[in-house]
Length: 169
Image (cartoon, rainbow, N blue to C red):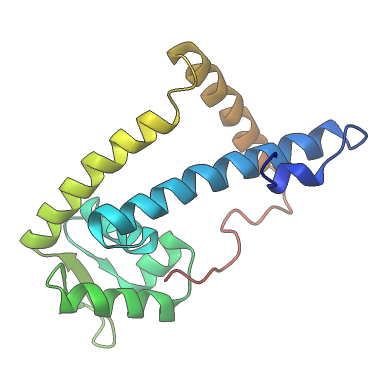
């Protein structure tokens, strides 16, 4: 029996662009599903928590809650909830923002940085494994093709590149 997925919505009579869109979504959902499950099993964490830690790892001076919300494309309330959890676990710390008394800067703690490095290394191995169905040349070709699509989408005036606000937890 064939597993139903987003692509199963399409038929041979649908436009090629629609069939391609559904295939891209299906592949994305499958990869993301594996990563979500492995993060939960191996590190007792979620993808939104991992993503927040990743943003902080790239910004050693920390980020404001607003900037985290913007970068992760989720509401401030979601960022607050995740930050509260990570702070209780000693992985991040909030500091008063130097120029805005109403705002906080969130930074990784040394423990948070160490934990994230372990997770990031394993995460990279998972992604390599999940995309191992393509040769290096095929990965390069797909990367180039998607770069062209990204450029096209970025240049469309009506496209909201930020995307919808989603619940992160």
